[in-house]
Amino acid sequence: MEWQQLQKEQEMIHAQLRNASRLREQKLLIEGQIDHAQQEIYNHSTALDHIRSRLDKLEGFSFMNMLRTWTGQQEELRTEKIDKAAILELKIKEAKNIQQDLTEDLGQVHAKLTQINEHQLQEALSQLNAKKKGYLQLHAPEKAQRLEQLANEEMLTKQLMIEIKEAEEAGDVALTKLGQAAASLHSASGYSTWDTFFGGGLIATHLKHDALDKTESYLHNAQIALQRFQNELLDVQDMSNKSLHVETDGFVKFADYFFDDIFSAWSVHSKISTAREQVSRVQDDVHNTVWRLQDKHNKALEYLASLQEEKVTMLQL
Image: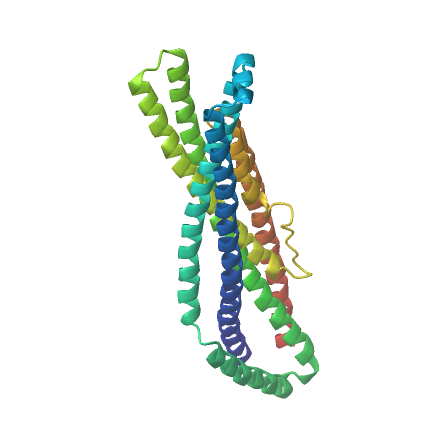
């Protein structure tokens, strides 16, 4: 029983130290993502300023503009540039919203880090390791090395299971937000059809724009949920070991391309059906990822049971 108590205390300390390490990694990761969002804001703003300048030139008089007007190219060029400008405005707004959400996440991570006294935990761990070493030398010197290996494997497996569970929960949140975005896109699509095919008018146009504004908000909520899911997946990947490797390279990047594709598809022409297809594909990605996480969690549970069974057998002999 004394060994089990020492093991339990060690697991608690290791869990706190692992949490501190994870929070530091999250801090660096989120700081990099904030920098990325700031760069996106700058790049999109620069491109938007360039388009605005070109549109001003199109509005002014020139023989080339006159020629393009005669040939019908003028309006085509204006429409193309306005379309690109609208997409850039949406991307700038989204990047600013992402930056704000990530800044709040960073504040929460920093607050949690300040509550952990790593120096005190390391001292407690050193004392505990000395007690465990003394126990093994006294009660099971011939089994000491294997028992210590089992203890470390058990501890790492439990920590991995915690990381997997947190990633599963983040994935479930992402699926909920994606579902809301999909439903909102469907609603916006209905208003768009009404406006286009049934005469529209002021009320229909207002309803459609209101629906699109709500959809934009739901899409943002889905985007930040995907970003947080991706961050949790990176934690799982970092915790993987040879016995229980969790491969995440194939799906941790979808958050980046998701919104870019959404805006490129949607644009000022409200190509909502294409946007709905993009959301559906990401929903499938997240569903598959959560399923794989659940499978890894079950395998980790089986592996943990085998470790504990071997440990009990060795202590009884």
